[in-house]
Length: 394
Image (cartoon, rainbow, N blue to C red; front, side, top):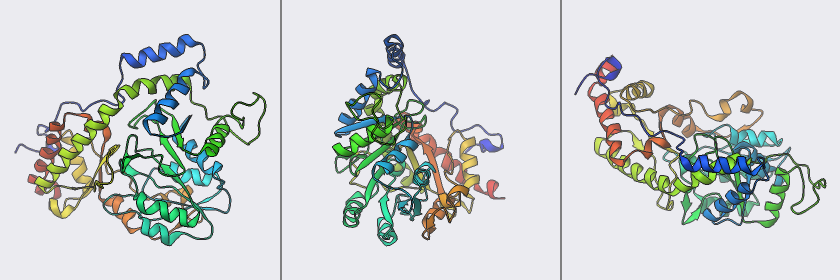
């Protein structure tokens, strides 16, 4: 096989991967529709149209849109009554927004370790971390795979805990046929630029509880009551309203959503099979209870002994040179981030999260939008690196 691209050889792949975001005439038409309406803010009809479409797509009674997925988490905690003196269980292997939202309402994040083959909250460890101060748990459906909700939901109910799903990676994911974001009390989605459905920024809240829906809407609309007088405010609230521009983009993005969901899963299945054939990095477990997996990330666990002791970061560097854009993801658990370090948080021992930061390799969701047979390029690059591992180690 030819010399490594890292040392001047021809890369395995020079063809670009699918771009993200993807757009076309549909987005342009919707933006023109907002422009012509004269109502560009959060009371544009397209906002309600999109909320209804997302609620229907996820079999939810209520959808409340917002400006981003960090504030949707904060809103959910606030309407569930979480505040100073309370504890909220969160994973340490996720984006910082999950734990930040807990701190922003004055509560304490409690970091509980994750499973080694999913990087999702380990429910057995959740049970051990519950104290009289615990008020809520935020299961992050990381990379698009749900936390084991069959075990978490009964546990939370037994202890009277609010379950706020962080579904920022789980657009279109289902668990036993039920869409992620509707399994707990409230589900929160992000629409930030990298997400599987995006308007550049944005957030969504789902719930099947009428009372919670009214409180969420009120909080997002300066404490107004649905159907009440314009200058009548009954709750402490903020302005989290999504604009018509965002809603227009999202309505157009929805026209491609299901086809993209199917393509990512098809590519992931092929890549799983390829990695097994070449004895490559280990793919994460795809739980059979997850009927649809969003695959916001395709993650692998790198074992250096399979590659002659080559360090993970050097392996990634070589793959990137071969035209495979990948990364090591998070390089530290959240409790090592300055604003979240104890005493701002409580930390159980999290050896799996620590290991995840050393072993994980991520491919972003747009890679999986390529033709499934293009996943072969990833395998070819890995085999090429293995065949030249001595040059990389020495």
